[in-house]
Image (cartoon, rainbow, N blue to C red; front, side):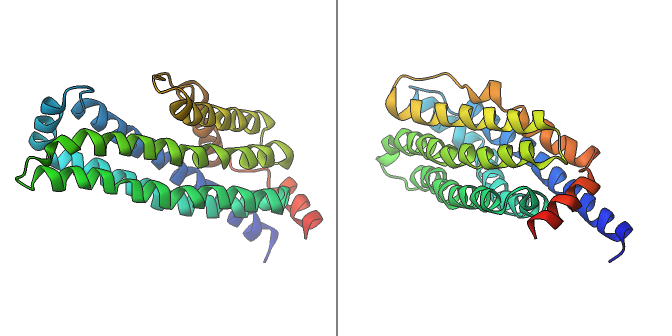
Length: 229
């Protein structure tokens, strides 16, 4: 392969990874927006009516959550190709952590579909709807542990790479801490309502934007790739 071909291939991978990563943002926001608009905490009757009235929207929110996990698989595989020259073991850890979270998050959507099954069962078991919705939220908190953990090796690799801005690596590690604080606080503090991740997620926006717009420093990437070969 010529240098031009290699350069084009590396930055094509970077831009594909950045584009797919950014796709996660609107899909995730859509799911959260639907949940906040339909679910009324402490009011099972209103929540049930909202879901029945907007069932298609409720179903779409679950589909978007499943799409997020499918896209996550392709994102982490693309990022592995970009970041493994900075450290293969850490790059493998990044892949492992994210892939552990994917099945948890996908199976968690069964709680959403259980809500629909109960709604259409015609029985008095609709009292179970708040239970399934609460279980869904707890499932998200469990998956969030891995959504946080994968950011640590990724942030470390970005910081150490030499072909990406170090500040992006720092922001990704900060994002990791935000997810972990929120996840464990939910289980340790039953009345915890805050969200640290809302203030620490910026690395997950700026990093893919950088990949999409700027790509990587190809010469530095090749030097690290040769050194790690």
